[in-house]
Length: 236
Length: 139
Image (cartoon, rainbow over all chains, first blue to last red; front, side, top):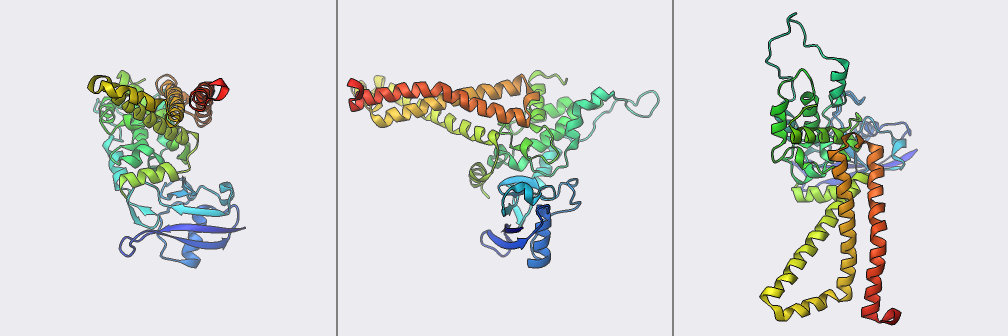
């Protein structure tokens, strides 16, 4: 099938303002949007800048807006877009470095702010090996372990668009992953962080995050559970 | 990109689903209610600060334009209230229902409930405008 691909282009060192380049190309309906961008780089314009690594929905490098909605470019097929007009833009709310590449530093700063690692200073168990956990205890936070930090959720969030100081859904998801881990001892500390001005209460439940997540994480649910834990002071 | 430009680009350009539209409508209806509340506080303050102008203010309320605005206001109140209850219920009592299917459905239900509540009120208010301002229905 023939498609018309419009790609956002902006090089801050050369361009006054962004523009869209248009490419007409024959593609297979089973091609992914990432494939189209690779065709552009190979056959039309090698200066196109984008991030990609594994190209199989695991590394989370290639989150972008495709026809106005956040996807991983490597996970969305042309046939699933239901149109032969495809527009690709960088994710929204982070500064564009070049073309489809954005500055992820603020995103990772927010991620780090919620202490996304296991904290437990208790003495080791008697056998000196591992802190055991039941399957039920593991299931409590299983869903939020799936995050690949692609930023598709955070950059689809209206609260993040209006204030980049908001920690955003991805940081809350990663806080949830440790808050509800029975082995972790710093849940209270994380809840205090998320109870601050730019924490969990900035969530307006617009639900774009859950719709955008390429890993199908129940993000709004996780955020609601963190809100409840902040409110009650209980981690259940 | 400034945050206002980013916000508006996202509000208008992001192709979200029912949750996104419910969020936007919630914002717009919330602003509508706040605007009316501000106007209402100002007009009521005339009773104290300029009683001789109060009747003039009430005449503005009786105008057709204001009447249409009040019909819109009633929709704002109903949608903002119903959608607010939906969000509060899901967030506080049923976080597990924040699933894609249930959220899409609940947002649509909130809109339908608001419309069902609004349409009879809107009809009655429209009747009043036509009766008093245009002399229809024997007015």
